[in-house]
Each structure stands twice: as structure tokens, then as C-alpha cells.
Length: 293
Image (cartoon, rainbow, N blue to C red; front, side, top):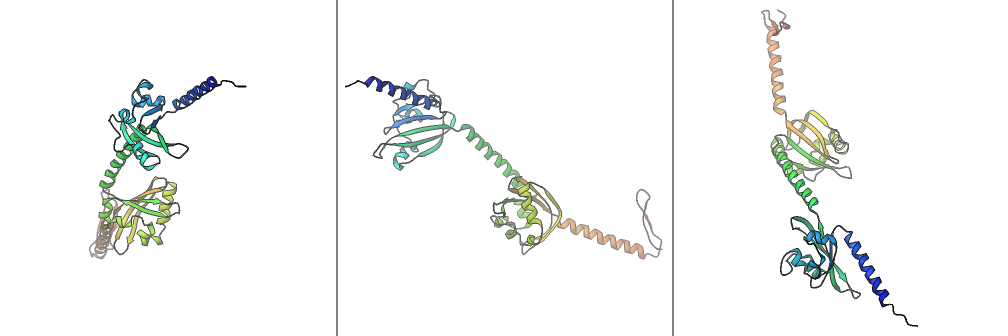
């Protein structure tokens, strides 16, 4: 018994085609199938939007370079051209109709493993790109502040193994320490500043990077073969796993205070040894010093 099922097959094929088209149209990215001559065989609704077209007839049968790039042939960086040469997925990021897009091409193989065409995908990444550009601009502003601020800054990163690693410093840090801080990049805090090993500073810094606390030292005395001085230090977390120490040299201030104390001591001794009576009062008439005489 013979039965003509041609019509049934045609209906099934038509239904399958509709199903695939509906599936493609539900995807937000522009997707189109092209042959080896770069002719577009099928595309989804998102392709109409990203190429600024209103009807599929304006796309199907046309070359992708004609619609995407407005040229008479493949551009030098064409991902399809590169894909045909490499045999695997190729992608690039470009601007298209005022948008930032990622353009990719994936090979389509037949049963013999030969490339018969490509799936061309155009993804609108405008928002992501704008966020990246904004981040870059923000980082530039931060870098300008970081490099011009008149306080020494050291930046550390806490690695997963618990080691606190020196990753950056500003120019003021070089001036304050009279040393090129780039020599410390990539070193642990103990390797960069060995005298700190015998203090609680490394552990406090690690805790700050991990937990987000802050800490202030009114005076940290430091001395090694190249750096010597007294510093006021403030440490704080910038992001989880990262921390910064700000510092300035207070060596001169300490020396000045020492000189004043010594002068006061000499002054007091002179008064104490005077044969004449000396009575010192402040601006509120309070007695501050009376010598034995």
C-alpha cells in the first residue's frame, strides 16, 4: 500500500521552520545564518532592530558586509573571514549605528566536517562598554588624586594565602621615604619592610584588609639600611582584600619638640639656681613656677 505523505512532510517542515524562527525571535541578540559567500540565509527579529531595518526582505539574500559595514567586501577584521581561516569561533568589538557591539562568527559544519557557513551573532554591549569607560574615567580621576595628594600612600593586597603584598605607591611616598617605592611592588610587607616583622603592624594591616577596620599610629619609628624616620600612620580598607596606609614624616616635629623640652629644662634649671626670687604666673595670674629663693 502506497500513501503520499508529501503534504504532511511539507506541513511538518513548515511548522519546524516556524518553531525555529519563533525561537530565534525570542533571543535578544542579533543572530543570522550566512553561507560561504557571506550571504544572509536567515535571521531573527533582533537583527532588524540592530541593523535599522523594518522587513526581513531587506536582509535575507544580502551580504553581511553590505548591511553591517556598508562596504563592497569583507573588512580586514571581519570575524567571518578570520573564522574561515582559523576554523573556530572569532569575535571582535566595534561600534555600529551609534552602539557598541560584540560581533562573533561560529562555524557550521557538514557531516564531513567541512565548513558550510557561519552563525553570525551581534550582541549590543553598549551599557557594558559605557560602564567600562566610566570606570576607566573614574580610575583616571582617582589616579590623578592618588599621584598628587601631598601624603604618602602605600597600597596592599591580601592574597588568598594570607600574604599581604605591596602593589602600589604614590610619588609623595618616594619623597617622604627618599626611596623608589616601585622596588617593593610584588613583595610581601615583611619582605619590603623587614624591621616591621618584630611589630604587630603586619598583622594589623592584614586584619584591616580582611575585616575593614581602621587604625592610627601617632608615631611609628622605622629604620633600615635605606629608610630612617618617625611617621604618623593611618591605615584603612579600600575594598575587601585591599588596604591603604597614609603617612607623613614627623621626624622634624619630634626633634623640635625635643629641643623645646631641653630648652624648658635649661630655663627651669636657671630659675631654680637663681639667687634672686623668681615667681612666674600665667595670663590668668596662676602661679606656674616659684624658685627656692
